[in-house]
Length: 408
Image (tube, rainbow, N blue to C red):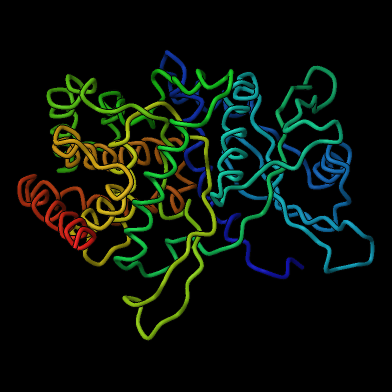
């Protein structure tokens, strides 16, 4: 039995609900749903557990004691427990074996730079997973899997286990919201100032759907919303984004974005208190670097605000606490602050439209795909009903109060 809860695995299971878009949207053309389904059939690995055990032991030189398959779309993941000294249970370690689909495996530069970033951040003191090296001393290995004409090449990595509970499972409070904002700013700044790698150019990902600059690409998929009131709201977001954000991108400070600091990709440890409002959280893990791309500092804080709103009982107040933490490291310029409302709305729109489109292709995955949509539509509609001026006043007054207290 796996003797403890591995919340890192929970996040990876959820992460894969989006992976079909990682391949289909990163190309310059758009596929039909039939092409998309065919692509998945042709590229997704399909190893049995025994094959995954053999792969782990042969490539990484570890003795597998237990293995469990994890759900996914394009990639294949396994929770792996290994025993370094036979018969010594307390020497067991947990890993995630990730077999990347054959389509994305053709882009080793991007996979390598994402992995190198994880290693760099870990060395800088951030709680990120790192790869267990292969027997040859490499961070990943391109493996031929299958027989005869069905043989395909897949990139394989073994990532270390991270302890903690997904923030989505915990009641949030101002303290952790502030810490998330601070974490987002620290991460972007250290990557932009100190990370160097020959393959870093691969993070210029063009039409990658999850880059916040690509909100206008949602025009192609908004039909998934039908004639609902939500379609009108998203149409407004897209139009205002085209008019107010795209012409002003040059006024924002560029950086490397994690791009997906959501409440399932942040693991925490909590010191219990008399009430959730007084609990003290510590971040123990940052997950899922597959959405990394070049973007802007203001993108990262907008994405963090949007996702921290999802499970909040008072979603409109969230932005001020996250913004305060972010600005304690990287203060935003007036132009960046002025874009924040539309950027948060844009990320809501990306998440909700992509989920609706994917649900049409894979209705059996409704439970995963509706995680954000269950409350996300309500939050997006509320933002527009309350209006940018009022929402900004709430956010900025809260953030400014933190700054005034710090100065005092």
